[in-house]
Each structure stands twice: as structure tokens, then as C-alpha cells.
Length: 351
Image 1: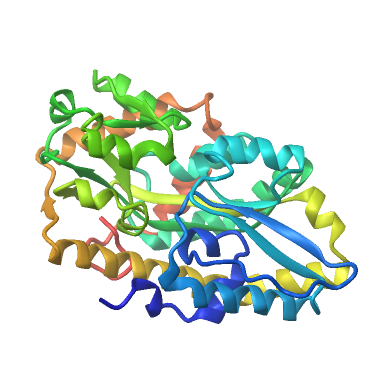
Image 2: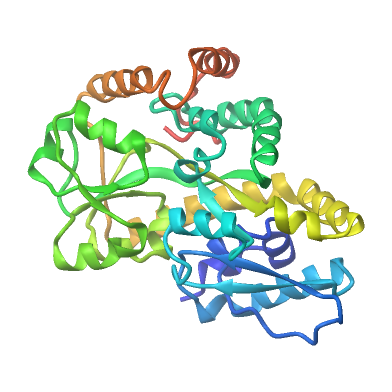
């Protein structure tokens, strides 16, 4: 079967986000003859190395070297070899890793207010997310820079859904399951507390084996990331959208400062030119992957008592005020969203 990665235009996909390329288009870093002053960008990813997409990453790294006149190349630590996201962040701070694609749950360690992008039951269309992101990320980027990080680009890695061995229709269904708790996610932990459920805390790199053994039978992810991590192999049902899986391509300020001004400007220019195109392609790929999962037998499940889910989301969103984000920034988000009303069934809607 033709790889899903083949639907991506390789130069756009592999270059725009130096860290994100290895989350969504994994492939080997091909050794190049180094210039005397060449520096190596060390990139960590949880995604396993995939031979079928090797040529795309090869082209991407080559393009990076061309873009910087062979002054910068890349080395990749695949399949969680550098540790989970929290460990990767620690290694970035220690200078042992230079870049990675990090989710909001990890970015919050240096930009706490960014968690408002993940406020539950807040966004129902891509237009809303894009508008909020455009308004807030300049502020978030300044905070990140002051704390030692460069966020090259923010984005989403697909529509967040619940994948499970048995159907999840009501909140009470979680109580008879063994749901995964991403141990770095304060939102998911609090959600389970609110509905009176005990989850199983497991690191990202251990989820697949936990599904195999039956230790967990409910996971959260997008169709794209769930497929890349092969969690879909051990689940049978998928829920309606619950939000967006968001994060950013992050490079340490330490590495950024070792680059020459010419290279920094070239990379920023490339990211700016390709960001929207990349995001559009990412959403298309996630949609295509979701449809492929349905064709392969994953069964879609509609929520019963939608009001119950919305009420739980509102309670959780309010509970996080003062813990993850301020009332002021949540109000700003709500005002922006009000300008883009929900229109289910339209192309930009993900509910």
C-alpha cells in the first residue's frame, strides 16, 4: 500500500519545520561530508524510524544543507532513543539535544500560558484555532526566547480523538476501562479526577506495549499520530473529535545563537513561506489517515449526551484558570473565537 507520506510534497514538508519533519516524516539522516565549521543539529523524536519515508528526510536534510551552504546538517535520535518528551526537554536545557517537536504539555514548562491553546471544549473549527494562534504566538514566542528556546513554528498534528478497545459513548464508560494517562498532561489528569476515573500513567514511548499487554485499553491521539505510533493496531473504536493535538517545533536558543545571522534569516524565511502550506497538508493527511483507519475496520463512535461532554469540558476549562493560564488570556481567546462561529459540516470545522 502506498505510504501516507507520499501524499506530502517533500521539499515543503521536510524543510519548513526542522524538528517537526522528524515527527511526521521520519527517515534516516544521511551522512554528508562536513565543512570544517559545519554544525550538527541534534533532533529527538518519539516516532520510530520508517524506511519507506527515508528518501523524503534525505531530501529534507540535503535541502537544509543547501540552504545554509553546508554550514548546518542534522542528526536524528529515533524512536524515543533520547527519552520521552520531558527527558528531551531536560537534555535540550543541558545542551545534549538541540531540537524536537514538543506538545503543549511540555512547552508549558517554559511558556505556561500556551496551555490555553489546549483549553478543553473551546475550539470547534480550524478558523478559530488559527485566529487564536495568530494573535497569541508572538507573545508566547517572546516568553520562550527569554527562557532559552526558539519556537520556529506552532501547529497541530491532527484532530484529537479517543481510540479504545470498547466504545466510549458516555463519561461513565471510562470507569469500566483502563484509560491511558499521559503523565505530563495536567489536563488529562484533572479530567479523570472530575469524572471520578482512575487512569493508568504511562510514558509516551510505552503506550504500544501497554496496549499489547492489556495494561491500558483507551488512548488519546490524532489519526495521524496514532497510526505513526501503531496504537490503532490494538484498538477497535474511535470517538468524535475532542479537540486538536497541538505543539511546536522547538530549537534551543543556545543552538540558534551558534548559527550565523545569514542562516537564521534563511531558515526563518523558509518557515514563514511554508508554514500555512505545511499546516494545510498536515490537516489533509490527518483526515486521509482517519478515513483509512475507518476503511481498515476501526469503528466510529458518536457521543451520547453531548451536553454531558460539553459540561465536563467547561468545568475542566474553568478549573485550569490560575493553574495553567490566566482568566485574562482565556477571555481573550473566547472573544477571538466568538468572531468565528461554529459551523459543523463545513471544511474548516472539526466537530
